[in-house]
Length: 318
Image 1 (tube, rainbow, N blue to C red):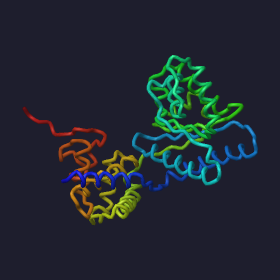
Image 2 (tube, rainbow, N blue to C red):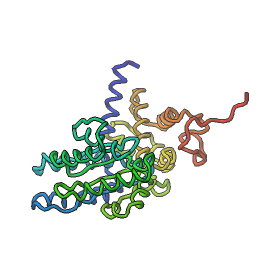
Image 3 (cartoon, rainbow, N blue to C red):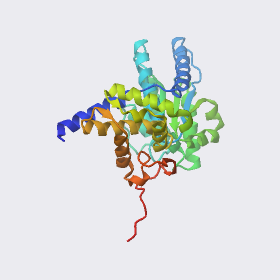
Image 4 (cartoon, rainbow, N blue to C red):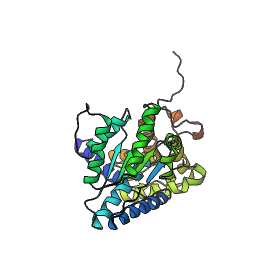
């Protein structure tokens, strides 16, 4: 296997990863966000200053939240440009750790292209944040892994961050919509502050069910195979493989896609033109370093495997 072949494989996988496949759960997310964006643009056109609202997307780890929001933001940026709002923008960043009021403000300033000394006080930092949000004509600020706002900060810090987010949405000069995405712990943050929750539209990504979603996952697999110019082996299109794939991905949509791409990477590296179950079992083994007895693409009773565990193996006698 040459370095050139590895480089070509990495490039092919990167191109597949960039391809976003729409799914049923994405539609309500897109609709909610489009309405928020249209209301914000209507206020700008009519020179009205109304309180902005936001969007909160929650779901288990691996559910595909980050990819969905990234696609949403990318599409909205293109739409803004096409509609003549090219000077407006959307800022997206991951919540820093520790998620104190000061550190969140510093990280947001960096995302806005402004560096500031850590010696500055929080009130000064957030005054600069509001200034640069207005100067950059930022319509929305997206905070990914937003559940971390409560993971390490004190209750006082959580209250302070929530208060600042509310202030951004109700700013007298330039209100900014807030997009929060994170695990179910994010729901606790919103329920902690009813005023913040009141300003947010909410969408939840549920876990997949092998019984209900196996056919949908097989359709997804076929779509990726067509795009990758790989022929799916007949056993990959059976209902059982869809159930195995969902179980191996711990019932999470985003992890299903990751496993499909990792299996395709194995096929590309081996210069195969067909995608088989062997590629999936190899991809799962590389992901978890498990014995064959704990690989859901190998054993018949795959339901007994805990797909969240890594290094799973039979107990060995010394």
